[in-house]
Length: 363
Image (cartoon, rainbow, N blue to C red):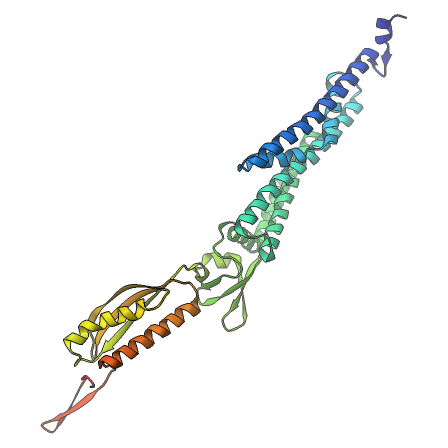
């Protein structure tokens, strides 16, 4: 028997030539894929370490999550389908193995993408520790469940299962479940909105309608606030986003407006001095920016001066300490210059035996 006749010998439905060809393609394919993976990962990793772009970092992560075993299974399946003639049960078996391998590889790639973007987002928003990190982890878990369901449906479809009735039943069941737990889903989506939009964070002092306090925890269903009086206020996330939220933690400065009234017998020269005195009292403080002070109106029993200034700090204690210093300075300067503060008075005039009541200025 010569070589050609020997190569044409049939083994398990295929000639020896076909078996050798399949084995060569299999060995070459596996070797090329493994070499490419090693070389490409190394090259891309070196490039990504020098580049500020995040896309190449994601590519490195996906290449690292590419399993050599999956590549081998896919090469074997390709050789079986394209080179060899195998019975239908064997083809079905290899197709099943290939689809399962692709399913697990798809899960690895999907989890890699989710983890990559989640970690960077959490670092940028300062959500790597505490309750915020736990909330992000829970949402990532839900996204991975969705990924698993989608890939599973694709796998079942490629394996020949009728997924249309399954999708329809899932849709009907999903609608029923959604109607039953719509409040919970609303709070869950609101939690996602809070995490992504970041209207406030743990530690922020916020005012919501009639409630005010420091945020202690942002959960999947509710947010917990420690009020100024000590009790904990729990508000559903959906209700929270419907309300107007004042976030005092994000102040950069505080505006102060106050009015001072002096008596009507104050001299014109003193009236001209009053805005100057107030301005000097404000500017004497280190963390202030003076805006204006002026003779604003004639009151029933006082001449009114309105003053506006800014405290260049968001801290409430700094704001109150600055107010205290300014008020004390104004009081001292007014006393030194003989300027009297006005207060409401009432004088009774008796004329012609009748009692007449009128408002007058107290000296």
